[in-house]
Image (cartoon, rainbow, N blue to C red; front, side, top):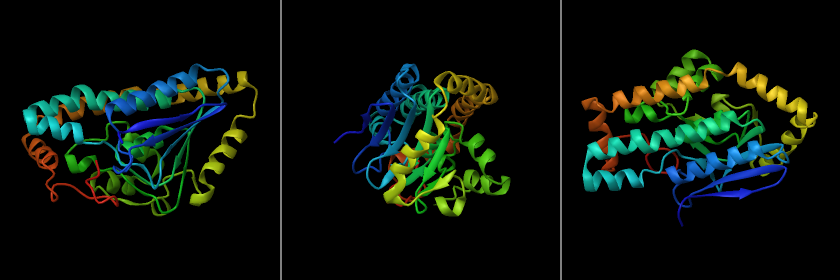
Length: 269
């Protein structure tokens, strides 16, 4: 079964990342669907909140590298780099920006491992809940890259500076309980109900009041697009570096020694 976005529409919309067998890793098509769903929710007056979660035991392990590996195998490293810079990274950033710009309450219900882009998507939400044992971390450093979707900003805001640097530069992966990164820890069987309860609590004010608060929050967060632009520019530059390209080629060739492994048993990107 291919990667897809499962959508349950209502006054509280639930979006579920689904990529069975690949830890809910995402493709450009999936994140494009996700961005479209957040924009639709933003424009629908009947929607009060959006919950983002993952299917099964995982939230999202970042990028599904199958397409990149196919391009690398057939056309080489230059074509793979072009795909990353021109297709993959912009699609991830558009999805992250759609989450961030959504005027409705956005809640991440992190039900399992959230790494790299998966963690960035969760932290782009207004409020984050996670199960205590969920493995989380940024693993872009294993590729020699920066987080694509404002992961640097998220972690520096939410963690003590030294710990943030260990996660970003050291590729540290830990449980949600160990990192203290999320707004609330919830036991697995209670996670989705807690997300729905939170949506009810934080959207009880009149709609006009919520809209004005959303506008105020966006103003306070006006540097987000600049963070995305910097990450895209920096990564495009890094992908011209010979050491980074060698590391990327090793990973796309599926060299098991080239990158860290998450609890899915596959490379975490």
